[in-house]
Image (cartoon, rainbow, N blue to C red):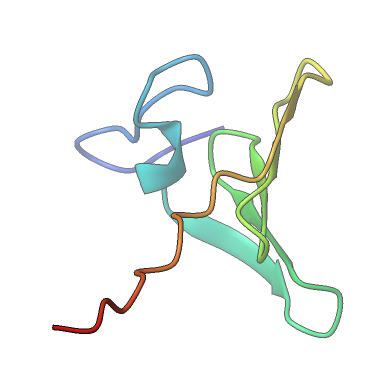
Length: 66
């Protein structure tokens, strides 16, 4: 799918989310990347082969009293 030069990472690459956005549906919370990966606003992903990647949100920072 990708026609960028240099090409975007493939859907199987570990950095696949770095590909360019080709379509965005803000009201539904997802973006389609040029490598066929669908990225959701909750950080979940759907790969072109149907594999689901669970949301991988960072843990919130905890405030500690000093």
